[in-house]
Length: 323
View (spheres, rainbow, N blue to C red):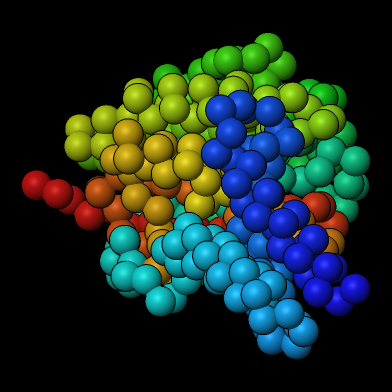
């Protein structure tokens, strides 16, 4: 009975590990790109448990399969650990005119703990705040911040895809676009830091593949790759941030980085899991920030809970003249 149970669990774990290889974008196959850490941990537990199996043949089989599963998943998640070289160098933010501090927060539309987000904003004073899932209630609740954030873009929606942009820097050529799906907006334009520096920014929140959202990952993947192809990181300073509804280690996010040429400051530093705030074992990095070579990193960290299912993410980048 014990041997059969471990064999069955191993078969299930192998199946969900292989599911993303299927030539389909359905959420049932693509969702298994998310819990790679959890799958690796379960494979390790099954590997250790197999040492107590009575059948030598089954023991070798279960050990071999779970070793392969664990190693395969580790290949994907290793860059987001301290065991991997950093992709973006760290510097001190000594010249305030050459830095930009961004807070990204998926507030969860049904969450009404706006005071917790306001307290975080007042404490850390980000130059830019981008809220996701924010509706008209959130727009009114955050009006307390207007005196500090004179430049704003409001896109309140009650479909879980509202967005609000608050900036201390002037906004130029800002547009709210529905790139792939109606009702799924994104914000694009420039932040004017000073007379000599403006930064191209893309604020995104594509819909995820899930039983309650899109049946397939195709719309999300299209939006991310469309932005990747539009980015010209060698020409102008660029930042892409938001809740991408994709994990840092997925093939789509990897393709996004490869096509865009943008850097991920988390590589070599940690996962910075922002979702799910309520379940410790079911967490992965859904909120992202990518940037061009024009920047180094001063700080990146996950913020405390604001009663949303996402933790806010705070990042401070330092502009470095490439000339």
